[in-house]
Length: 493
Image (tube, rainbow, N blue to C red; front, side, top):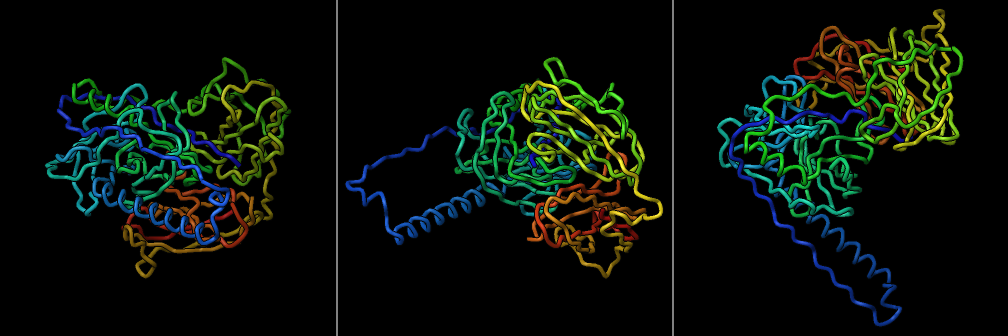
């Protein structure tokens, strides 16, 4: 199942009249040579030659990875505010830090953690404007700090190596991931990469093999609520960085962020009934457009009850159907591309709470037009069998004798359950005593989803995910910080 990131932050820039010394590297295209073989045998090296070539290539790549990390990582910082966390790049020795606007736009105290572990306060100096998700911070009393040079504009090529360094999930500072530049989105000035970018990497650097900044990591495509990287990440292109820094230096960049522009509109949603008549309509030119990919969409709203098993089907012979289900406050619950067979979309979910739900009826490709049919079916879980669909229902206590997460000193408990490939599960962690945090690991031990707050208004943690494989899954019950203690309820459906 393909999936779509919905919320590219759109903030404005603010201005400050401060000189910003920044090193912009000169572009130096690599030189290549081609030597034709004298005989056909030269084209077919023996197995030993192949092995030697592979080992040599691996050694070269490993040396490059190490060199880039050792050169750049000292200048990568973690950024924490009262509400968010992210990453940033030191671009001047006196403490100017480049990051995403959405990392620091909520205000409050900004704390920067250097690679050597020092924690320093910083001030937000400027924001990008016209939707540019960039900001500049100034570390208080910064001096003699390591920096990362900025690559020349228009120097990024599809296929070149790409290195991301940041603080994924706000808990693993100075993590390096490696990939390539997969695509250049010239319309939005974005670099697409398969180097793993996860929540917490926002604002950190995307680097070339010379350790130069080629982009500012900003967004990912993800598998639903609480999901992590699936190989499609985005960085703001280096082409946008020098003009932004010049605006900051000239005092033209905004000092305060403008209101966030939502990625989609939910006003005037059409009412639709569970188990009601089938709806037919047409996606067409003039409809609302998702800014992430310029696809048309319609918005519907329905009322549901906690525990209802709801199946939503979108069928069309003219467009590649896509469905996105949200809570009333815009938090994502599920999305689907082709689970309905062929190019039809289908979502099956147990509703977590009573209330209104928002449904985006969408096409997978930009500009697709055509008719579709939409149907919502619901089945109430019998009150005589409240355990129906229940995989795990566990009460517990986080207390001093529990395991401790080394990265932040927070306590955690672990539980396991058996899952099937393609199975859709909903995991919820509730507590009145501490701020819950959830993490889900697959049978191979890889993190596939994590969540802090179920929604803007619900501080409990929740994960909705389609299981990628059959086997034993591990759920980690955690507190957001090391002060978390108390009772909790873990539910897996």
